[in-house]
Length: 292
Image (cartoon, rainbow, N blue to C red; front, side, top):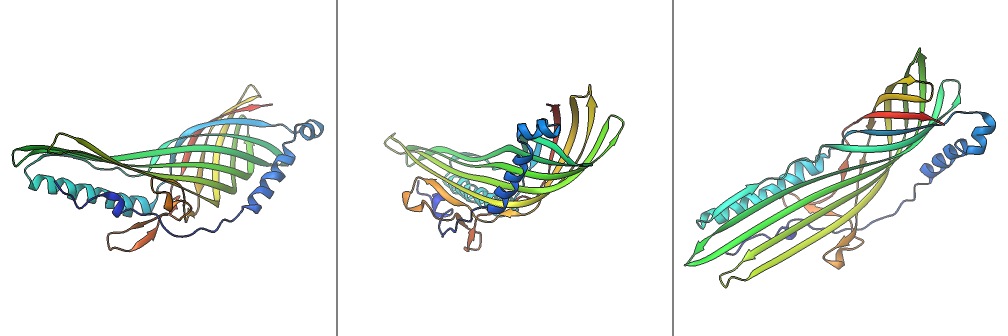
């Protein structure tokens, strides 16, 4: 059976890249760690809170969810329809959207002036979605089989610095703040096609491409903590990132000539579009803090 596929004709990675070193971010981060120097903390008797977070991050992207993923599903759906026209038995599992998944983070916080504190932290989030088509049957007295699977995996490592204001009421602390996030993103695309031909030979075609991008984005946050036995706080925090990672650069590919290029895809109108990641979502986490 001949197919109009393969997917790599529809999803390509091309373009150029300009590297911008995030000087502003590192200056802010260095400034915070000056405050977090253990000797300085001891001398100034400033408390240092270390916290662990576990929650949900909705790192949605209009480009991925509204353009790329529907395109991949349509390609696989067309492949299934082609197999059905030949009288084959088929099954199709469409790809879901990139949306909410578990996230984890650690951070340190120290007060610097009255009801204000400085915070530095790092987090981790990953979401993978898959789609597949299977088809099998006889054609001209020969048996054929086909399995086509496609996967998209997104990973985000946010490195954050923030300034928070707080209000204490008894054992409760209410806080809000703003800051900058150095967002480190990774996009990975895989495609595997297995075909059983009329001679009973199993042929396989595998394609993999990995692209990375980064951006400095503002964020807003708010939350509440409950103080328990002076050294522990339990609470919740909500963060909202603002902005997008506009371009991603290929760092690994089954096609070596793509290395170093910017990731693009061909949309449903045949136009070449840069692959971007708009962080249009929020993060909600449970927090445990310990006072050193």
